[in-house]
Each structure stands twice: as C-alpha cells, then as structure tokens.
Image (cartoon, rainbow, N blue to C red):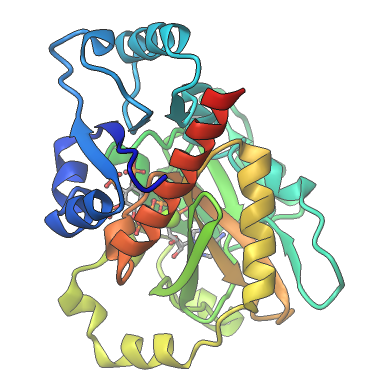
Length: 317
Ligand SMILES: O=P(O)(O)O[C@@H]1[C@@H](OP(=O)(O)O)[C@H](OP(=O)(O)O)[C@H](O)[C@H](OP(=O)(O)O)[C@H]1OP(=O)(O)O
Ligand SMILES: Nc1ncnc2c1ncn2[C@@H]1O[C@H](COP(=O)(O)OP(=O)(O)O)[C@@H](O)[C@H]1O
Ligand SMILES: [Mg+2]
Ligand SMILES: [Mg+2]
C-alpha cells in the first residue's frame, strides 16, 4: 500500500470543517497516503472524483441523490456511512432500540437503556402513561427528533408531576437515573474506540426532590466551555470517577457498530449509582466531535487506513 495514494472526499457543515479538518489531521493523513479533499456542493459529485471513500454528515434529498448516483458509478468506493443508517439516529425513541439486542459476555457488567415512553401531540393523561409504564420522577423530556438543530438538544428535567404541563410534544420521556454526575462518552471510528469522561447532570437525592422546582430546562450539559469544565467541584468529580472496564466498552462499541451499520459515531453511557455495574446508553450521535479526543488525528488516520485497505480488497474482487 506504500506507493498508492487514496483520495477521501468529505462533506461537512462549515462548523464541523473548522473543528475536524485541522492541519494536524490533513498532514498526518497525507503522510500516510490519504488525501482529504473537500467536495464542492455546487458541482455534481460524479464530476469531482475519483474518490476511494466519501465521508459526510449532510442530509436532504439532493445530497442523497448525488451519493446514490456516485455509488452506482463507483461500486468499489466506500461511503462512510449510508444515509439510511445515519437517519436511524435522528429519532431518540428508536435510536436506542439496538441497545436491547446487545449480548454482553459474562455477568460482571450489564448494558441497557433507561425506561422511556413516547409522548405525541395528542397524547392524553401523561401522568397515567408515566405510572403505567413504571417511570418514576424525576424524568427527562427530550425532543423526539435529534437532527442536530439547537432545538433538538433542548432538554427538560421534570421533577414533579406539575412540571409535565410545561412540555412541548412530540417528546421522549426518559427516567432520570442517578449516575454520579459523570457520563462516559465512547467515540467509535470503525474498530478504533476511545472512552472519555465528561460532566453530566448531578445526582438528585430522593429527599431533595420536594425542595426543587417543578421543571428545569437545560442544553448540552457535557459540552460546556473549558472554563465551566474547570470548575473545581466538577473537575474533582470527573477525576475520581472510575472508568468502565475497557473490555466491556469495546464489546459494547463493536456490537453497536455492527447493529447500527455505522463506522463513525459516539454514545453517551451512564453508570446506575444504585446498581453499580449496570450501564445505560442514553444517546447516540453520528459523526461527533472527534477533535476533542487527544491525538484524534492518529485515531482517525488509523481508521482511514482501514478503509483504504477495504477499498483495495473491493478492487481486487
Ligand atoms: O460540535 P461538537 O464537536 O461539540 O460535536 C457535537 C457532539 O458533541 P460530543 O462530541 O458528543 O461532545 C454532540 O454530542 P451530544 O449530542 O452533545 O452528546 C452531537 O453529536 C453534535 O451533533 P448534532 O448537533 O447532534 O448533529 C456534535 O455537533 P456537530 O459538530 O456535529 O455540529
Ligand atoms: N436518562 C438520563 N438520566 C440521567 N441523565 C441523563 C439522562 N438522559 C440524559 N441525561 C443527561 O442529559 C444530557 C443530554 O442528554 P442527551 O440524551 O445526551 O442529549 P444530547 O443529544 O443533547 O446530548 C446527557 O449528557 C446527560 O448529562
Ligand atoms: Mg448526548
Ligand atoms: Mg445527542
């Protein structure tokens, strides 16, 4: 593979280009035979090739058509990832379905999802639905659609039944699980997996529930600015949190990758404080902020090289 160069085309929102396509990545990939090439959306895709691989985070019928046409004309090229597979992550209710299919070896750790219900625009008696499904307060209300818009990240913590009146369906109501104020974000790029700790919502002790408001709104808690993250209490909390075993993380990541048929995603996982070895997946994101991982260029280039090998295999078939 040493003499062969590979052209990887990409289509990403401008914010993502600024964070992900850094010189360090371009250079590291280039030194390893991978040229990262921006795709111009104002020109037909098929006229901009050849591409060995196309990676993208863009939706809509026009882009879908372009990709389909390209794939037909370039059957050995690798599309990371198929739009249909990506779009399954746009619905917070169904995005977690696959988690229930995972089979984790041994019984030292378990994986699952919090109890959740769907609330549509015409749903009646929310409280009845909550109690009949065994949900306990507090619950988190999440917009059903997770399409990357600011609104799709707008969450509400509902602490008491009275808070339910302030919600705007369609939403998913998920039981809030105390998890020590730290989430584990597991970044997956093909077979390369990296787990990091991030700040999360603090635990809510049952005895404190009565003293709190009915409803608290919040957004992207794990993505707060560096200054917020440096807050002493949170820094200590994060530092002290014990990572899940790496064998377990890798097992979950690999099985999710196969089940979702995706190469590039991350998932948010919490550890149930009450049970200790029970982990819950609460969110899965397509093409997340890899640049936040130290040395992300090494991880991403290793992934690109795996794809380049797969492309060579496709050519020799
Ligand atoms: O922008 P970043 O680097 O914070 O990445 C966002 C992700 O942050 P993370 O890597 O998980 O900390 C973020 O993850 P969370 O939903 O915050 O867990 C999303 O993946 C977000 O994409 P979108 O807005 O859902 O399309 C990602 O945003 P886009 O860059 O795709 O707009
Ligand atoms: N079921 C839950 N129990 C406890 N905390 C949760 C739960 N669901 C979400 N959170 C907290 O809310 C944050 C945002 O929820 P998430 O589903 O990850 O939405 P987003 O797509 O905006 O990241 C999480 O990072 C975590 O801190
Ligand atoms: Mg999240
Ligand atoms: Mg998300």
